[in-house]
Each structure stands twice: as structure tokens, then as C-alpha cells.
Length: 440
Ligand code: HEM
Image 1: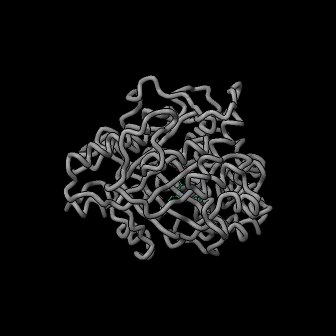
Image 2 (image 1 turned 90 degrees about the vertical axis):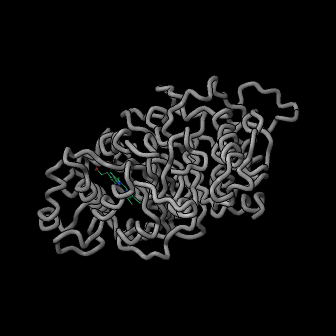
């Protein structure tokens, strides 16, 4: 769609629309807008690089974690100390077009292409603990069982999308057909967008750095999904008056409290060819927001957290809960009693039952975004990392109504009844040193 025409009819934020639409003119417009917003003295003389947003480049591009999923120290933190995910998200579903098995030249090409991202941008906040906005980029590249099937390999701890769907009782037709998925997150929309242009040969410069190589001929783009998260931006994007103005996600509450995420080491593969990496679950969900907001505040808070939580404690967006959803082992164990006493149970108390024996969560919400590329309704890009795809399966199953011996209507059973899976896949995210066309 033509960017200017879209803008004319859209109520959306300019940068968010640009990221959603993609393409060269949207990127240029986005860079222009973001440069104007951040500019503190550029000459604006109409020179060649006038439309480029010039962000700090890393002094030492190799000074970043080997685990591509290791974002904790490179994310903005809020006043409570919770990590705040970057505002813009681009998820690219890729098809492998290279040789089987991959050649050394192809591997070097992919390495050089990805190295360009690391030379051009800092890793998130670059470890700046006080940052309130990130100048950098965070990315993960994951490979699905489809890619490994081509190499006749069956690496642990991966499951094919069909196996994941089967394990969580969903239809195999929802499997995403991707060989790989590239996830790009940044606070600046143009930083989330620009790598795609560099990786597929639409520009020869990325944040002032020369593009060394592209992914052309190795990966083609099948699907492009975009999303946003963050206070103040989500309500504006969604065609639903009930979403609280300050809500960071469409269902109204913040998630990703420090105490409800797995420790990063717990989400890291500890042995085998992908040791130091992680696994990535990628889902496209639809959320029935109209039905969700037909309920009053008390019902929503109870179904998101736990009916024994005090409504005042949760507040409008759960921001005031601090660093924890305050689910206790007793809350997790009391699902049946709560169903009887309150007539509803909470998503958080249900999924907390899938924690490990020490009551430590197994998965981390990483990336994620309220979909900005759907024409109707509310979509969501759910992306989590965990050491083993099976961990994701266990958590997802803890959301199912049939796992519980309670007499409740489905719409009082946490949030599962408001979600519909549109597509899923699962991937291995190799450590940085092995991310170029791995062979297990
Ligand atoms: C799509 C809409 C969803 C929303 C709005 C949502 C929201 C939340 C919220 C507000 C919490 C409270 C605690 C926190 O995150 O720190 C939570 C916890 C959690 N959710 Fe969700 N969730 C959604 C879907 C899912 C899905 C699809 C899964 C996994 C399959 C999932 C897994 C979890 C886990 C593991 C926790 C932490 C539980 C613990 O404390 O042990 N959520 N979610």
C-alpha cells in the first residue's frame, strides 16, 4: 500500500504505521520523523544523509553476549526494576534457499550479513543501566525443525511446529511454514525496520556502516509481522475505547514482572551443539478484546492474576504490583478452591503451576508485540524463550481448561478463552558464534 495514502486515512502513530507498512519510502519517512524528534543541532541543509537517524555505533561490536537471547542487561528498566521490552517489533518468517548442506561461502555470507547489524547498532541499551530509551537493536535468529529436516538432523531440544501444536491440542494446519525466523526489536521504529533493508540489499548503509553482505540467495522473506508494546502507544493503536490509556499490552495489564520470568540461565541450553543458545516459541494469537472488556475491572483482574488478589493492589494496569505478580505457591495450589469460592480463576496462578520444583518460572517473555499488521480485531505476537521447547508446551498446557477439575464457564477460566491461536512455530536460537546456518 502507498505509504502517504495510508497515512492520510490512518489514526495511528506515524512511526508505528511506517514499521507496519515496511518498504523503502516508509523507512525513509520513519527515519526522517525520528531524526527530527531527536535532533539537537544537525544542520538540516538538505545534504545527502539528512534523512538518516544517526545513532551511536558500538565501539567494540564483539562486546556483547554470545547468547542472542541474553537481553536482560541490555533492556531499559522501569522504576521498579522490571525490564521493559523495546517498543517496536518486526518478526520475519524466512524460507531457506541455500544449498543442502550449506556451503562455507553461504555460511560466511550469513556471518558477514549479521555482523553488519552488530557493527551498525549497539546491543540494546549497551548495558547502560540508567537508560530510559534504547539507541540500539536486539535481534534473534532461530531455526525450525523444517530447516534441520533439510539437513537430515533432529536436534534437541527442538520440536517441529506440528509437534508443538499436537502437544497443546491444536490443529497442525496452524504450523508456520518457516525454516527460520528473524526477530528484530528496538525503541526506534526505524532501527527495527532498517536491518531488513540492509539484509535484503535495499540499502548499502546501515546507521552509517557499510553493508558487508546480504542474506539474498540464502533466505527469502515469507511473512512479515509487526508489533508494538509500551505505555501510551497500545491504546492509541487499537480500535477499542476500553483499553486503558497507560496499558502496555492490549488486555490492560503489564506482564514480564522480574519475579515471574525465568532467570536467563534457566532459559539457556546447557549442553549439546547449541549450548549457550535458547529456544524460541513464536505464536500469532488473536485476542477477543470486545468480550474481555465486556467484563468489569474486578473480573478482568481476577482472570489475569488471581481472584484472591485485592483489586486495589492490582490497580488499573498492574504497574503498582512492583516486581512481582504476587502469585504464591498457595495461589497456584488453590485453583480448585478459588474456582469454588470466587467462580473464576486467574491466568497467572494457572501458569505458575508449571514452575519448577523450587517455584522458579521456566520461560521468559522476550520480544512480543500487539500486532500492527492486522486489519481487523486485535492480534498479538507472543514470543517466549526457554531452554527446551517442552517447557513452553508445559506452560501452555497449564492454561487449558481440561487440565483442571473445576466447574467453571470457559470465560471465567483465566484468559485462555479470549485467545485464539492463528499460527505457531518453534525454533532453536543458536549462540552468536554458531548462528550462521548451523549444522548440529
Ligand atoms: C496473549 C495474551 C497474554 C497476556 C496479556 C498475558 C499476560 C500475563 C500477565 C499479566 C502475567 C502476570 C505476570 C508476569 O507476566 O510477570 C502473565 C504471566 C505469565 N504468562 Fe501470560 N499472558 C498472555 C499469554 C500467555 C501465553 C500464551 C503463555 C504461554 C504459553 C503465557 C505464559 C505466562 C507465564 C509463564 C507467566 C508467568 C507465570 C508465573 O508467574 O510463573 N502467557 N501473563
